[in-house]
Length: 104
Image (tube, rainbow, N blue to C red; front, side, top):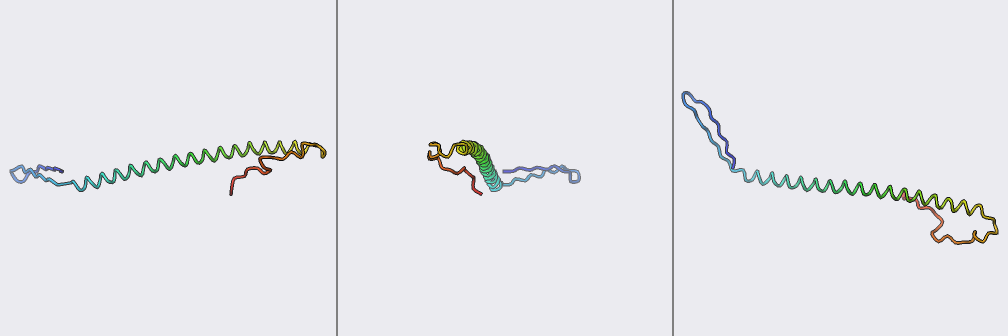
């Protein structure tokens, strides 16, 4: 319930005007808006967390790829310095011969 009162002068008399309204529907709609807003805020915060985790994972993958590039580069450098008859030249590479390159 909402209660509103006004006092005003009408001629020689003071008049008190009182209004009472049922605001149950308005309160229910307001509560629903508040609940929906809190739900959307929580969803937005979760999306921000996922974005940060994605950026962190991309950074780690990029750094890891850089380290692998150095390791593969040193392997290629050592292989190029081996003589043509070196028995080490025929050692198979178990991890593959290409570097990890992120898509796109």
